[in-house]
Length: 220
Image 1: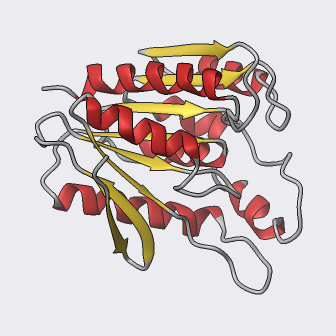
Image 2: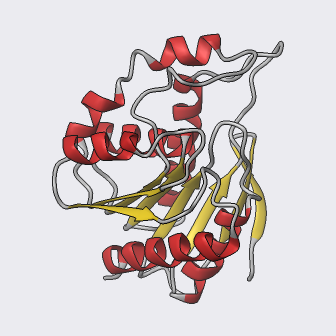
């Protein structure tokens, strides 16, 4: 797979262009303690490129003084990456995110109308269950953006995907989001998959389903 490392507004990113920009670009957003180098994003980028879709993934900013960056700051970064994709000439853009990244892409798509497809893996409907040091400001800031309400404003076709053995975000979170989201929408369970989709065979199922969903909606 051909990928170009770059910086976008100080964020480390990898752009994997397809041969043609006619099918659009997918922007991937990782979870709280994840990175753009996670196997699920690498494998999805490869599968998208194989199907003629470009992708752009990035590492979110980290906070200072032992604190994690707030949701507002992370959303600013995601919007900056979206704007960069537009500057490359892409007219059709999809968003994919996992866990906190899923929260972010759903929230952004409720605020803006320039997306043609969405995919969210293992996404919580709120961030109250987050555990760890330095998360207080992130959790407090997230209360300004209750996804359970914002998701009603999503306009793009939505794929929600969740592992049945998720040990961090109970699968009913995706069910609640699915019930609140407007159509068109699809909810899929990946039997036996954990939160990070660490098992290769289950991760492959998620990658292929997601790539097919995005290709169908980002093709001209």
